[in-house]
Length: 132
Image 1 (cartoon, helix red, strand yellow):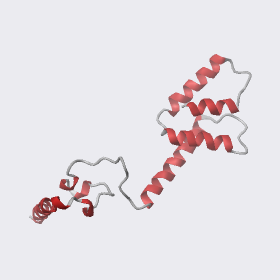
Image 2: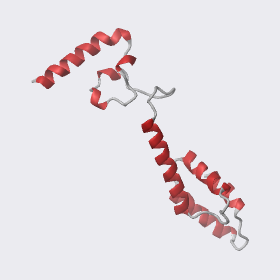
Image 3: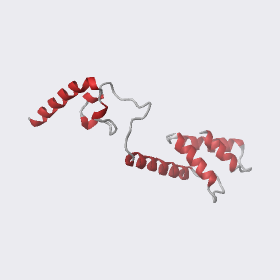
Image 4: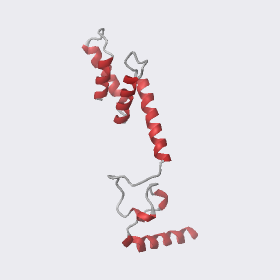
C-alpha cells in the first residue's frame, strides 16, 4: 500500500490536516486491501502518468483500473498456451487424479516414465467404470 502514499505526495492538498489525511488513507487501505498488490501498484502508476489526472483518484477509480488489469491478465492466461511455471505446485502423483480435475497445464506427456504402467491401469479402470 506504499504506492498510495507515493501517489498522495503528487496530489498534496494543504487544506487537509494530518489527521484527515490519516483517516483518508485508512479508508483507502481498507477498501483496497483485497486488490492484488501488483495490480494496485500498476493502477497508481497509470493514474500518476495520466495527462489529465489533476487530483488524487477516488477509490472506485482505482478499483476500476485494478479490475481492468485483472480482466486483461485472465484473458491473457486463457489465450496463451499453458506451460509449467517454476514454483508451481502439483499434488504428488497428480496423474492418479481424475482427468476432469486436472489443471489445464497438466498433460499426459509430463507423467514420469516409471509411472506409465500405474497411469494406464488407473485409466483402464476408470474407462471400465464409466462403461458399466
